[in-house]
Length: 313
Image 1 (tube, one colour):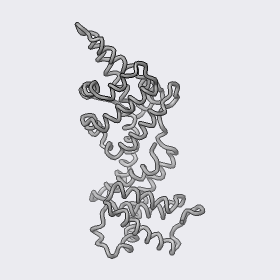
Image 2 (cartoon, rainbow, N blue to C red):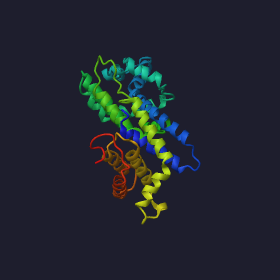
Image 3 (cartoon, rainbow, N blue to C red):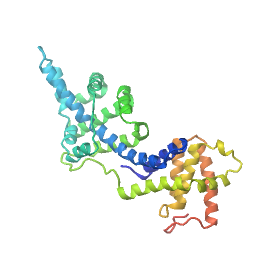
Image 4 (cartoon, helix red, strand yellow):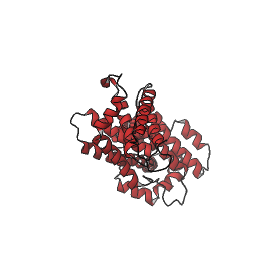
């Protein structure tokens, strides 16, 4: 789930915070970086558990409706239809999912008012109307309905998004990765799946080593990296080069110099892509030009040491 590009983003955010705060403690920023990876996975589990929590809310609504002096058979039928969602049942009964909730201490607190508002809005939504047209929905139908509901809530339901933002400060930065992973999880749900959760890391030891080293090398070699960039931006007022651009260039050069198994082109291209996301429209060309000049100079001086054929080109 947490791929290398995402790890680079997290390292960039930590370095940005470290650079902006005068007298910042590198060890504290590094710890926050690693904690942030856990918060991303917790956010994923939190949203995945929505269907289970909403089902619990609907069970309460069902009991309330049945207890009325004149209960509505239509409302009872509607609620039972949603409670019987097969995709929610697969999630709810999956042992790996429940272990994940326990390990990451995922809890929905003070959410009854939110769910009640969701329920009110959902009853008039086209998503539900379309879903109800099929009287015998399949697991695929139930998965699509749950996926559609989560997409609606996170994209168009301001109250829900505000609730998530208050609960997770990382929501704005992590939502694309988390929502993409969530949709993939729902698409792949099967009745007898042993583990419905994606692996947090493809190789946790290597990933953590990479992101920690990336942060540490950038901090420890900041002066050297600054000099490399300054030498190729002599016609620029150094104070006017955007902090984001400086950090992205330093990170790219850090990988070029201190990560022998990562191809040079991969490192440079990754940070050019991040520039599109986090910097100005003109930054991509500026960063590309500076890095190209620096890497040519480093090659001439034989300072790029890559352990593998073709990694320098």
